[in-house]
Length: 78
Image 1 (tube, rainbow, N blue to C red):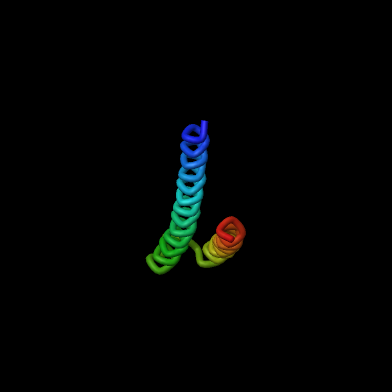
Image 2 (image 1 turned 135 degrees about the horizontal axis):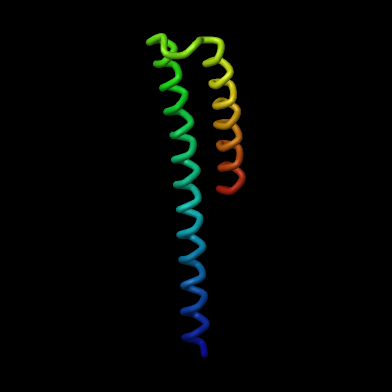
């Protein structure tokens, strides 16, 4: 009985750790994606592919999204 309990607790601990690592990784990738899109928009403005006024609106939304993702990642990593 003790062996089953120890094995179950060990697997549960590993599962929790794996899920937490995966969630942290996914949040990090989402933040990186937002940052990439922000850079692409800046390049598009520089190359004349997109109007600067439109780009400002897009970048504002991306900044807000990035801030929210960072804030959320701090709450789950405590």
